[in-house]
Image: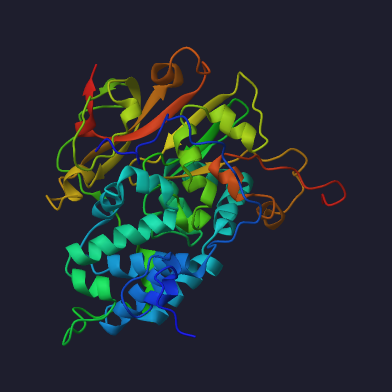
Amino acid sequence: MNGVHDMGGMHGMGPVQPEPNEPVFHHRWEARVFALVRAMGAFGRWNIDASRHQRELIPAAEYLRMSYYERWLAGLAELLTRHRFLSAEELATGKPAPGVTGLAPAMTADEVAGFVARGSPAARAATCPPRFGPGQHVRARNLNPAGHTRLPRYVRGKSGRIDRLHGVFIFPDTHAHFLGESPQHVYSVRFEARELWGDAAAAPDAVYVDVWEDYIDAV
Amino acid sequence: MKHHSHDHPHDHAGQGIPSDPALRVMALESLLVEKGLVDPQALDALVEAYEHKVGPHNGAKVVARAWTDPAYRERLLADATAAIAELGFGGLQGEHMVAVENTATVHNLVVCTLCSCYPYPVLGLPPVWYKSTAYRSRAVIDPRGVLREFGLELPAETQIRVWDSTAELRYLVVPQRPPGTEKLTEEQLVALVTRDAMIGVGLVRPPPAGHAA
């Protein structure tokens, strides 16, 4: 979707403000949200693409006003009700409905180290050869889906060169909507800065974007 | 004295999920705990992992090893996930790693314009500026301006490569080893490598005079 989350190349966001000796979390609630998102995600009712898409659905003005972990909290609350861990009433009242118990065993403290160490690999076995090879010239398709995509607006319609092949990965455009993993080859494409931003950009510079096969055409 | 005003989020405690994020999160956590969906000790362990165990000291070990062991450097650039696993790091948000090396002519910079993807196993959780709209919007269109805000002015002829983490690949910048560190041990080198250098918004500086071995 052409949401405000897709902000590569936008102006008006102000300067970058690094904070010396920044803590991992600024508030305890941020740490709890981080942990809740991970613990509830581990049930596997949704996936990382659906989780990202849920945050993209936050109305644009709200998205820009919220801090990072406020977005995580908003996304989590939506996912919990959409996937029936909580009813809207439970979320509104903060009280569990009578008789409702655990739907699956909760992650225990002992399981955390394994969960962190395993992660959730998104690579899949190749079932067909890649359509493109290193050095090949390609153009990003001018796609504007209303749903989830990982093709940023700033490269659509632009030409680049395949830098390397990454292998086969779950396709977020279908996975985010629970329409299957549809794995396909992912490539790193090098776009010259001047191709993306015009002659004012520094001549030697380039942006590398990871794209799924369905995002590009041969030139 | 009892208030019935609705101005204060505290008045809503126990009567619904309040608007203040701290109170909302507390209410949501206790609801999920009551339903048996969440074990608070598991949440503690998750927080503990990223506050005290996983962080940029991991990435610094990878970089120092690459500086001191040419065969390791080769393996890291060829298959970063496997090379990083050799040092015991990997997993959540580092399942598929790519290492990109700075040279005399190339400087690498990592961003995620679409959300805030970041290589947890080697760098820990991202700083606020990395997740900010300013960094996400500008790193791709104005990398030199962004670097200037970090006090880094690169020569016009240096090629800046910006890596936008749009897929499940996570990027680690291998900074240049600073001059005058030839006699330092691997452990001493680890102490020089900063998080910012491994994102590409900083350079690794030589140790202050007098500290060099």
